[in-house]
Image (tube, rainbow, N blue to C red; front, side, top):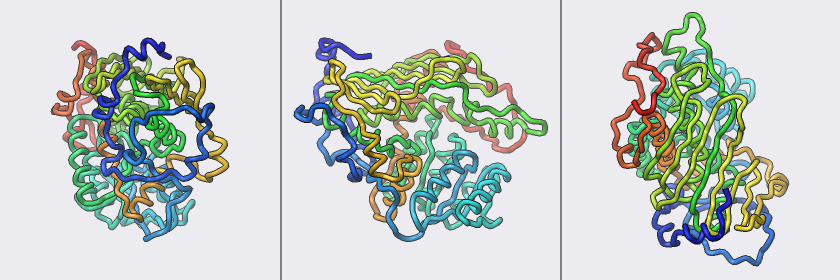
Length: 461
């Protein structure tokens, strides 16, 4: 919602307080230049003078060529060979020359074999039987098989331990988001990220908006001061019901839950974490702020399987007093919208319909991302591929990049919102990062479990 000029003046924050709450994007603080950046903007008034929120060179900008530069052959291993893992494997292969995949791991044999078949068909890669690993410990075998890079796309509850082991073994990593779904996982990720930095390992996460040219340019414009100081935001992921798997004859309790993982809170973190964290991440990225408190609500209306909610609404108080409203829903027949809106003291930015527009306080468009120029300049505009381009380039050019620390902040924000909605209570950053809450099951076998433990949360209880 557009605020009045009077309201914006009343609620404006000093630039000093904003900078105090900001962080340099990318834990290692490496700088880059976006190829073709100068032609990807369309401004209505070139004479406007803007006061930067951050000076150029103090925030991370990825270099995003169509393909990574040449260099030594990089051997990747994929853990989690379902739809996202198969997609990431293909994205990796399309990101550069002289990259390959040498090992696969999953809990289910047929998923490993299906991806192996696809890699042979599409890229001529033969994954030998001895490098096809199955079971809950498959990640260790993949990492120990002689890979350079771990591509981790398993259900997210397992991601922290996989990342920890990869760092211990000195492997670079691509971590699909979310990278943690509970406080225990958050702490594991943060500790492993510090070790990755110390070992000069490269880490890219699946927050693909960070490698989407339109978002990168939007971020640059906001840092240049196009909307003034950020005073509020709203982020959305409202869509129809997501996929689910009905239980089949012969499936154990654990097998069913893992095959239907996106509907079980212990595996996915609920959809506010598993999916909506993308949008929350845009605000934490653009603002450089983390939340200090969350007050939310949600419910389960029409979800068919699993034990999680299908809608959330959360009010986040950020560390400088700015408020972020977050909403997400997965229910058929409702209003759908996926995007972000950020209000500043001088204007607003939104990703409405993928257009990426900045307006002044009167509603006039002062900047819009030029998608036609992008398509004329670049051949590769798929951010799922470009995140691997960035990873390969960072490895080959020895450019520091460690995105796990940054992604952990937006993931923890989503965790805060979920726990507030589940309990009906206000949740603070400090109490949540110190919480013993740990969603992972202690007995990881493909047998039956006590399903009475998997219940839908009831706020206030």
